[in-house]
Image (cartoon, rainbow, N blue to C red; front, top):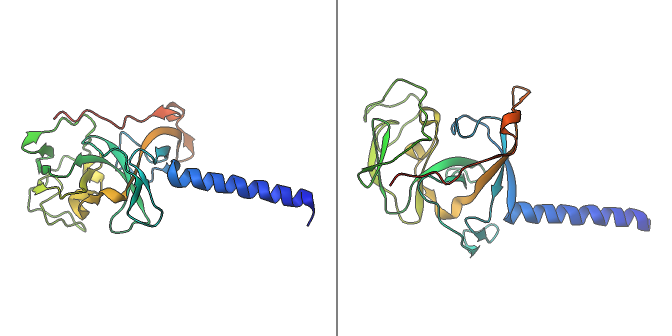
Length: 214
């Protein structure tokens, strides 16, 4: 093996290790696959996620080397989907440990107080009563539009998509443990849908800290 070939191989390996280190601990790219966060995030948006915001975890464990800030109500967060940790979801935090969350006719209440939700979007005129079940989706705490009240357990969070009528979120599968929260998105670096580039969304800053109105 020639020295030139070895130098070339070593440079590639070092670059890959640096990229892997950055991806593991600092910044990771994701593509938005569905409309659950519309209109804030659209299918085909490519985003960068700050992975250090919520701490640095020891790989393959639930332990933190350094624990960053905790999510607040209104923050957009990326997390591992609890029933399948190999999958990442992106939703908005709508309840923190100790909060009692209730949904009455689509309006979210936290600890009995109505939440200001300028980001919430509703695409359907149908409001499901508490005991109604959407075909194929069940929840033990009520329906999509009338849910709870349920107290968020310690070290867990309640997540909802902004597209409230088309989001598979904590209303249906439960709460997100703190150790499964992996980061917060900060920019859309590219956006394309049905082969059409959305130039107006490229390099758009994502407002992850919406006022929760409490």
